[in-house]
Length: 426
Image 1 (cartoon, rainbow, N blue to C red):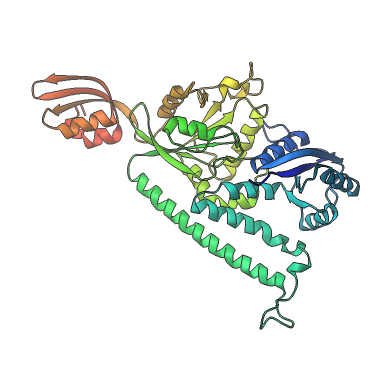
Image 2: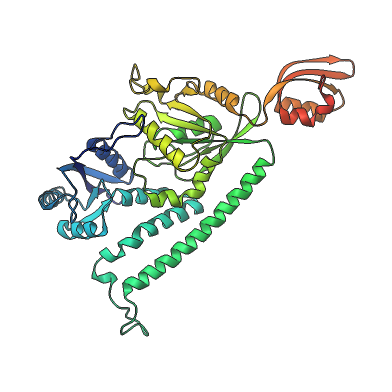
């Protein structure tokens, strides 16, 4: 069995005037950001030996952290026998080249780490296409920083002389592959559009679980649908979108989708690549914004997810705030008082606490195919109509009156329309 990779984490705290945070969001400290980076590294399978934080007025153009800190990192890597150093910032091609040369070990930045996690977790063909596209878009501008091996002339017949450099050949190959991946993902998008159109042909609403990574979305999804989606404490444990049907108390059916979690500084290449998956969020009738209520950063995570929801075009979609892990939340909930209200549900996906109330709230929030009281008078011999009422409506009372069955029910509009001939007082 392959031993886990030893890693050292490095971050930079810039001592300059901070930008004004978004509404409801405080500034994340460098220490908090490094703590999240540790969780990412451990999710990727690394063993974190030590973390280093450098305070600077401005980032160093050549190495980000400065020559003195580079020497300290090199000594730490040798002491811990670490083969990897992870930076909590996106490195420029020049910084990446300089750091690898000076440190003598592999260097990756936050973006590369997230891409690696996504590559490990992608299971479906769509997810693998999306990850590869994001990786290539990240790699393309960094080819020039990979040293002389990427700029030599080709060595085969017809490549000698003043022909293309290897760098140019690699760029062309990557550009062709990117175009192919984009075309394949466009086909996936067209297929999703067709499936969505077919779903919309019947009165079936969709709801999407969204939230910060590791908020417990997949555990809640499994609790609501009985699905077997992977759920554990690793960041980005779920990558591929899963859709399942659930029944509400009104007996209406709803499609529920579990989507990839958000995170601060999510690479733009990933957001673009996962456009097809994020469309499930954009097209949903209701968003269930799942929050880890036990996290000290819950309020700021809420603000960040709200920002991302707005950026992908789903800002106007109705949503319920689901405060998950409520059984682990500290007393008083100092960071969550502003989020009290009728559109807030407190649940524990692990124990099932509050889940029934959440489903009832979802039922009230769904606007498609509205439910209303109805009185049906159905002939005893029409078993098909009686079966429809039992399957698609909530029965209030039922009694026999001669050759008819009198049924009082709360029924969706689609059922009332299809059985209009049996409605009393319609």
